[in-house]
Amino acid sequence: MTTDTESLLLDLETQRCDAMKRADYARLREILHPGLTHVHAKGQTDDYDSYFRSGGTHVDYQQIDRSDLKVQVLGHSAVMTGRQMLVAVRKDGSGTVRIDSRVLQVWTQDGAQGPWRQIAFQTTPLAMSIT
Image (cartoon, rainbow, N blue to C red; front, side, top):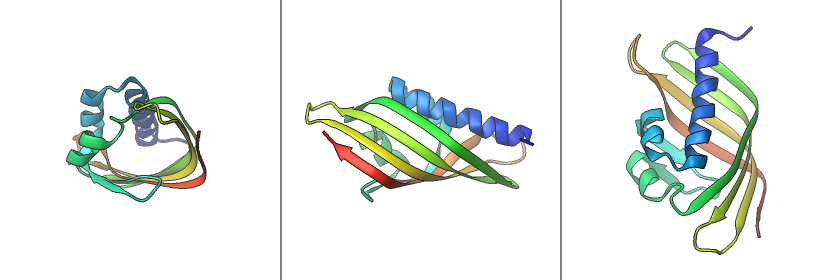
């Protein structure tokens, strides 16, 4: 049985992926926590500010499919795990990136009534190709 909080977090993850595909950085700024740590598939790390300077601005996301999502709510924090298939076209014309990965995310809620926001993201590639 899925709790209301689990449903909310799954919906926020859908919104995050949609915002990435639409390059809606205003919405992403609402979903991502200012204390963000984002670990990319090749191991480079961004914080909130550097994510918006580099993260996603050099590619057009064509596909971000999430599957096998599981959420474990722990008070005002939650851990989300699952699979992600990402396809992005580099804006400089140097190719298309396809990454099939496992993802670990941490979501946090500021206070009992505050919004839930993603504070940590790490992707571990199962398969990656650049064409």
